[in-house]
Image (cartoon, rainbow, N blue to C red; front, side, top):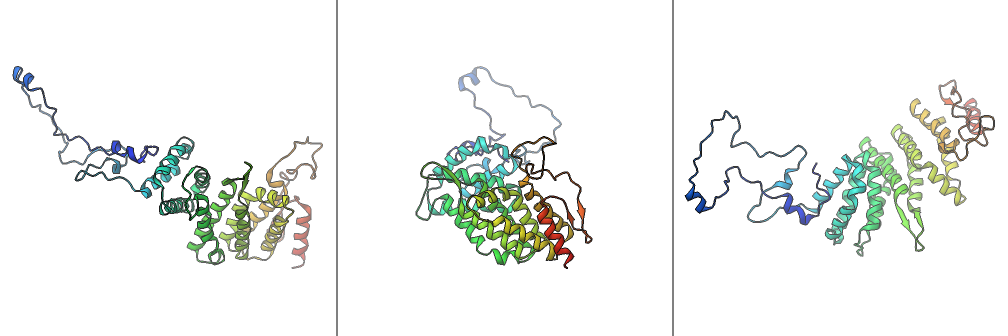
Length: 351
């Protein structure tokens, strides 16, 4: 991977300068040559090097940047190539985000000047974020930065608007995707987790300078969870668990501020899945662990209590070290959130 991602396109001439041929010999001053004839003695070397050997490039160096001139024209990279190289670079070296993102955005501001170019940029980032699992978080950070620093704002919409429009395209087929084949579901799960990262990282600045999250994404995540739980296959349920571990605490806080009980409804949905769905035992255990996590306020501790003062009411982690018990069917449960587990046990005895 080339380390020249922070160079602007106009600097590509330096990177693609043609290599100096080995047959090129520097010309000497004519007068000096006449005064002091040079006697060249051909050394006798036992070399296995061939004059026909390909040119050498250091490991990790992209030969695309070292292409020679052809007919006097330089082969500049396209926008797609430049952006894709940078995305691959961030995937391999995420720690370089802080030091290189500013130059990257400045370069794009001089390059992305049309609706089509902006649309292409959005699609490249979306595809990278949904095809490479480890890039969903970095992709969300990148989207947030570009939404605030790209200057182009065409009639078709600015960067953030086009990004949300692209996400909506995938969102609208959520029900079909959740019940599709394995490949379709895998692509859908990648989209769900990327949208979760976008909800956490995409900042929207209000007219008074306040920073908020995109409410439209909050609504979208709720409907995506419905689609996943309505098709309780193992991989769908695993995706739902991952999404709730990622965003559950933030979603619940936002819903509570609005007086909504969406998280309570989701927990009830999980209980129904555990009791009725034909999912694997491991997945049922994951769901129960998620319920336990939520009952401990998503693992957050607001105040530290001494051992003697700790109670289930003032210490959200009170039950975290308690032993795990199992029903006759092997379903684990703990003492956390007694009301929930009592309901579960009563429903088990009625089956």
